[in-house]
Length: 177
Image 1 (tube, one colour):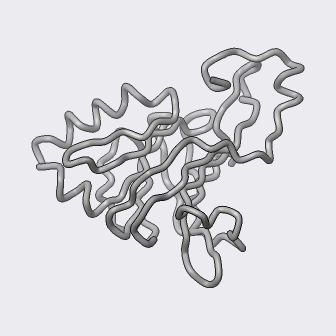
Image 2 (cartoon, one colour):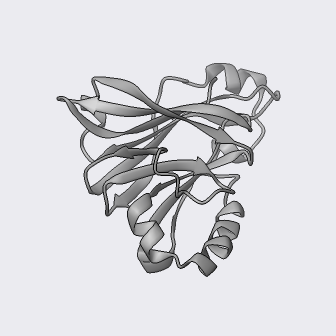
Image 3 (cartoon, helix red, strand yellow):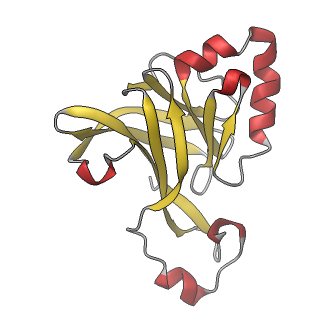
């Protein structure tokens, strides 16, 4: 709701920018979380973070946009269920270039298996219609894909592997740079 309405200067100043707002869950069926520009197929094997399969919690940190009055997503986390409070650190995994003001986070292996080459363009076009607000979308064969606006828009954003007890438990995308 905060992302869909213009806010007063007082409301923006009072926004808790450290709070992680839960957005729902995403079922990771494989082991490769991919982050890509919404207009690009998430097939680049260098833009993945290896995680364990299972339910993952999705959360965002919000902040004031450079455009006065709007709230935007500043950071995104996708973390194995129950591991969010145990994150001890983060390691830079890669930078994701964004040219369409939104990213797709998906479980790359099941998605690439589920979408035939001829179906990919239509599926990505459908995802683009959801870009203005964070959402989890079920595509072919119920493969879940997270669509999220990228802060103030285009750029290159760091993707981190989140660590807990020496294991990777999720990812974080930082749209503040």
